[in-house]
Length: 412
Ligand code: GLO
Ligand code: MG
Ligand code: MG
Image 1 (cartoon, rainbow, N blue to C red):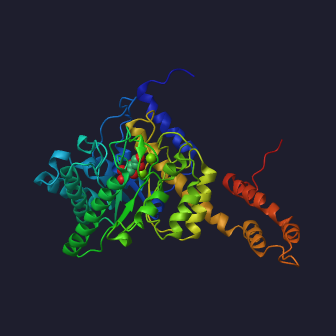
Image 2: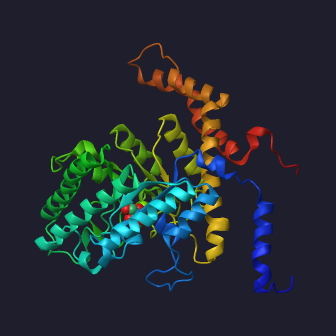
Image 3: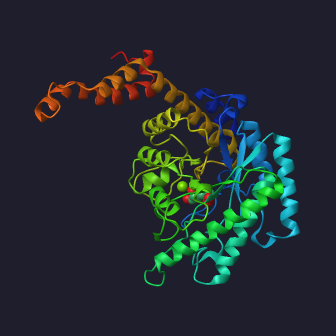
């Protein structure tokens, strides 16, 4: 193929996007509770070893593009949209006013707000640092985010304590730091109770998000399970207001089965919000778009969530690759991420309704019925052939994933 001049590249990519097919209409996409983070679309491709590859994008553009794609909800950190120095000032109110207008004119809702407590130098020793003034500032920031959330009509506030930990051991006393962190969350919940009254709205759902490593070297609340224990530790004054925002990749990063981690959160009644993306086990937070690495595992996750009637948001917390252009972020990256999610969600419905899987599952639950329930050999023998169904169910799920259940075959 001859080199493709830059002026012809977009039309080529566009033609190939069309050739892929499989896209849903914006109206269809809006039927799902999918949210698009400001920071995901505005990610410039930078990292410790990476210079940016994309131009900055403001919230007006992000909201407009999400609207065109059919992403019905928008989420943000406070400082994604308000410079740190402008917080608590008139500048904040002016920006919140502009956000409201942008959401309204593009038909989006703000579903979640979150406080940036990891990037700025003030958080070098975490938001639960030894210095009382850092913790007092953190409490004010959290309350301020709650207020912004109510102003924008949000339902959720998320807390990712990625800086709650250390690089070098010894100076931080873990129990003390965790108590201080709980005080911050308590302050946020108490502020919410007051602010919600002023706005005549229900309080927000406060969701903790765990990540096992990054940016601190050692993290004090590294997993969703650690957070469940923290929520019920007795340190929180309003544990009923606090739940989880697990992130798919964050569980995979420490080697967990994300579906099992989600199941534990469901059992505790704490699965309130979900960050969706993909990546690899025991690697850093690569934040690849949903379903590009582990579609079968994703199908399994969505079967669990559909069968438990999870109705919370699916937040597209991924990073369009550095190789994707500014134009490609909205032309390809976001639409295809949403469309893979929808396809996998609908496929999860196929799995739940599948007669083969239903019958196999029912048979496994019925068991073999041994004559003597205390005879161990009889119990093993009674289930001997039935247990083959475990593998059959896994095989059937792959068939559903690749369309073989609809008769797709290869002639060889
Ligand atoms: C980083 C996290 C981050 C959070 C966000 C919301 O790894 O996934 O993006 O989701 O700060 O609190
Ligand atoms: Mg996240
Ligand atoms: Mg991540």
